[in-house]
Image 1 (cartoon, rainbow, N blue to C red):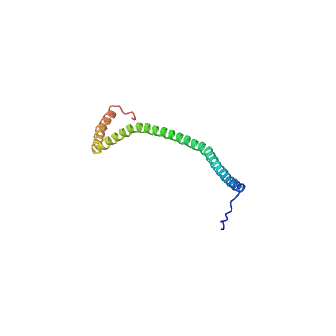
Image 2 (image 1 turned 30 degrees about the horizontal axis):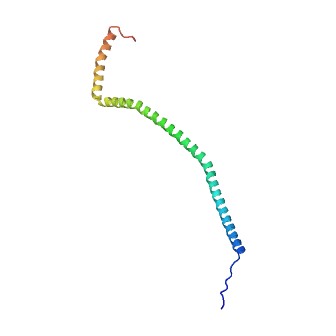
Image 3 (image 1 turned 180 degrees about the horizontal axis):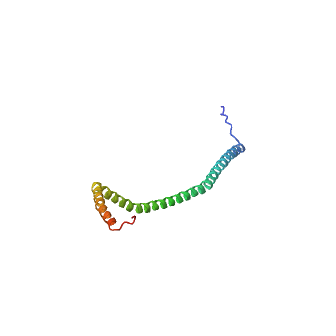
Length: 131
């Protein structure tokens, strides 16, 4: 009878294979660690560069908003100051528009007709300065 011949690795061969596998795992772990370190370094450097710029931008935005607030307050004060003047101007225009210019012209003519004889009378009695 023939026995099946299987080659059984020796203990030294098994330990050598285990050692090779462990070295492969160690290299893979070191490579992963290096990649993680590079990634973390990139994130930290990005944060160191971007955070100050972001804070500066936020400061500029805050300053701009303060200036806008001042401008809005000035505009509100100007509106409060101009509104009464516009109201008064509108009222004055309404009064001017409500004048009856025909009657005004007639009253001026009547006044001129009344003053002319008084002027003539004043000249007759020596009140004229040009004579």
